[in-house]
Image (cartoon, rainbow, N blue to C red; front, side):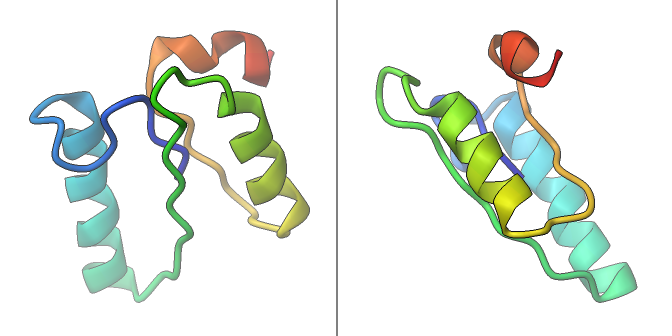
Length: 71
């Protein structure tokens, strides 16, 4: 999971995604890496690359700011 600025604890869409991930971990026993961007979000694409290179079969990019990195 690649969170947007604020990550877990932002009381917004990152937290909503985190709740879903936590439920999937509990219900289905999945394992997941979680990455947050730097304060300015400059490393969003780098985080996506790291998850991809780690062989993660499914990557969630949370937030519209990832649009360029996933298209």
